[in-house]
Length: 110
Image 1 (cartoon, rainbow, N blue to C red):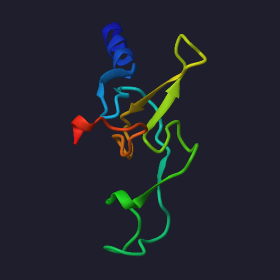
Image 2 (image 1 turned 120 degrees about the vertical axis):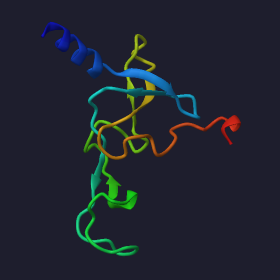
Image 3 (image 1 turned 180 degrees about the vertical axis):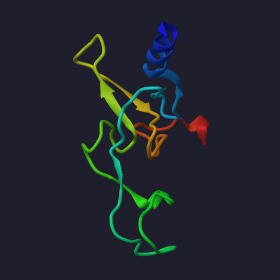
Image 4 (image 1 turned 135 degrees about the vertical axis):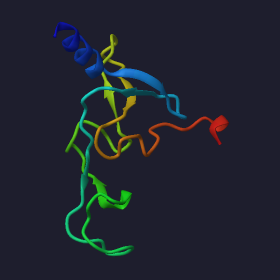
């Protein structure tokens, strides 16, 4: 049982898994909440029907609903509290991966 608890703690701790084209870190494994939510009502165009999460357009960003910004990232305090660092997070709910860049992507990515 003790080893299962250790595994769960390890899995919940955010892990650096890579870097985005703009150079910011990408983390996975945390339990942060996205600020996107499913829209209400029905689609005005396209396939019609209720917003049910089938399409990207079914979601909207709502500032401060979750912990992350529109880019699915956040600033965190580091050892230098006057200079927080920014990173992206993968989430268990939409948008799962960053959909926008906070910074400017390096030209080598084009």
